[in-house]
Length: 529
Image (cartoon, rainbow, N blue to C red):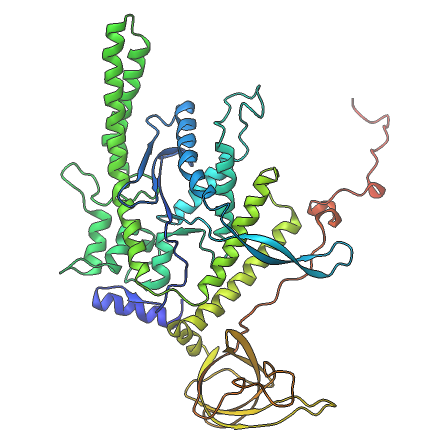
């Protein structure tokens, strides 16, 4: 945790209100996000109990599993979920724009530009908390390998037709959520925690109701008191006023309300199955419908407060202007969505259960690069984030005192102007370290030359000044300019070149080598058969 974040938490405790950690919004928010509030059965990971899903805050779709132990009811729930989510995803798939992409030429091995298409936008999925993101991952893993009756007529318990496809999309979204800066799958708690600091612990910040109590403090209340009420306050029946939908349920709700309602539902099903004539069957069918409606009402009562809280969080975040470089990260999300769309349409198999060594290394390297890019872009977009780097000596803000033109000593001299700046910060500079500033959205590099006095530094610009002897207009700062410099690069380089999966040793998932295969031991008289 940075010093500024620590100070913001202390100030939040003193004032009773969350304090801003950013001046802009560092994540893209879609104009029409799909919000999913799931609920799971206690004691069984991934077993669905219900969900609220939709793009309209006033008209959510309620999905319920009246008896989670019933395989058919669970399949019906997943089928209904697919019928809600997949049309939303597919509505973005055909709206495309022309784009260029770099690919490796298989014959020359060089990177070449190829014409392709890119989805003009991508669907965004928002869940209440990190546990909701994990639940999406579990659902994806449980659904994408299911076999349908069309794929395998002999499979026991075939899945509904669209369920495996939903599993593939959920798996892709869950994988993409692990890339720093991605906005395809977002948790409302992570969004709020990125932009505000509360006076409670990071664990308590995962409770959406308590977190919102600090950010959106009710009139005449304090954040601490409102958060305590959101976590612990109960009604006359002992039920939480702010159910967590975490997606686990509250034990008091399970024991006092849900379990008796499910027992009535099971009893009504047994009586209906045992009915001997049409009149009694009609009466018992009515009892079954009433029992199911009661379960739906109970589950809706647990989901609706969290549904409203997610949309309130979205409203608060929309009040912040979007960071300038958030659009660039969203473009990478669009490439990711387009790439998975192409794999689905090409009929490729679902994602494997476990990545091979090369794929895992590539994903890790890509996430490390994305994290470094995110840190740099957030600092460049937000003065409050940059202030954290300035306190750590990783950046400094300086005023230009003088510019002395100089050129390199080569056959074709190029401009290497010396820029003298004054700063009140204490950057950790030494030797011939490089520093960077943003010039028209691209990084310009300078080299530290010397420190002439306390807070007075001399820097030598080394690039982004054109190819002629005279620097391009605007590429060299002038006296009086105030510039933000960083000691870290703005654009991170890619990771190391990795071998093809087929070229890795068998210990890392590659094929075993036939010339080193072990032969079995010869049989001896001492062997016991």
